[in-house]
Image (cartoon, rainbow, N blue to C red):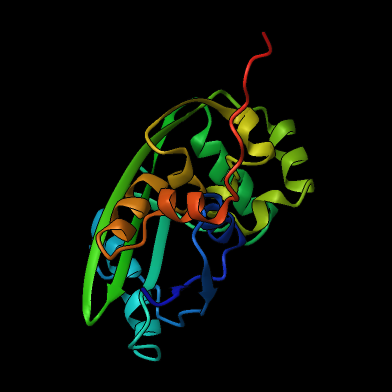
Length: 206
């Protein structure tokens, strides 16, 4: 199988893909990410993943292309990246002491066809104090994160409970991603085992 292309400039997606032993190159997709009028969140995130994959595959038709999209949703509204301190405070205030959903979709474009898988995770926050939200903004972490927080960073201290995919909340659900890759002959476990030198088994001393 030809080397994979990751259609994303997200360092978190790259880190997650490396975590499961997959080699790849990066190519950034340039698409319009505006939701359609009345477009459901699940439909929107799936469409974004497909369009990112298609955009990169158009320039690399002989390469498998993996793309993903992730959004934070509360009460049917998509929460993007906060523009400023005020927007971050408003977002995190809405997430305080309640559950929200994180939708992720993964699309794999290969040989002119597209395979796709979705993940939806429920995340529940504890109650947040205004002073905590202000201090969190000052760390710089919320600035480029959908929903204004990073579950893999300091934002983890807000998370009371998660039901679903932790890696999906980070931006690339690994269970679904590995399943898609295996359908085109890219098996992370086999690739990882073949890249490791064989080691002698340890024996117990008598």
